[in-house]
Image (cartoon, rainbow, N blue to C red; front, side):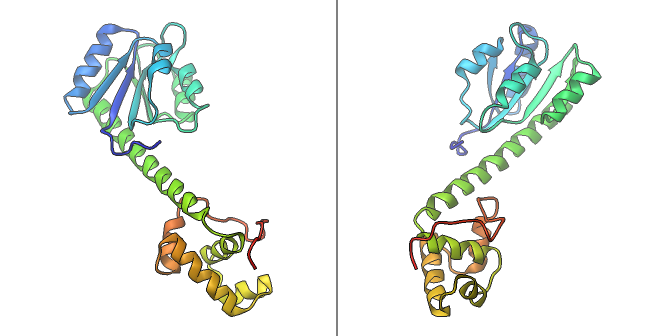
Length: 218
């Protein structure tokens, strides 16, 4: 997931060519990029998950129905937001789709504005998810520059520990902890503990201060 700068693309998968073209025309009226597929297998073979946007899926299609396609996508590292559209849906189908994370389950004939609202919602959800992923990846990449002890100190700082508490926990001097903290802030590119915490939000921040971390610098 690294193309957040790309324009959002709405991918439509529907075996009904008339419905497919109608949906594409409607969505293109929003000045959005649209990609269409008549068969789920073709979609899986050609879809680029790094491109931001959302999916609009029909339910009943040859080879693989929309719900099975949703299940197939769930095996990926990231599943884009999905809006289902169908002329053959029922309550159990809609419940299954929503429970699996779909934005909505719309019955044909579709209310145009309702569909456009759901697509806008889905694109915004996708945008936020990709931003978070990029922040997480950047944080973790920079964190690999830390020594084992620096990572331990950073974890405690993120958890709100004071330098004195950290020095007692590790059995090292206050001055040594201060030096580690200074190195952490320098390598992570932040000015203070508050900025460090802010940078770590959503990333692999520590949940358990007693978790084992290999220390290679004392």
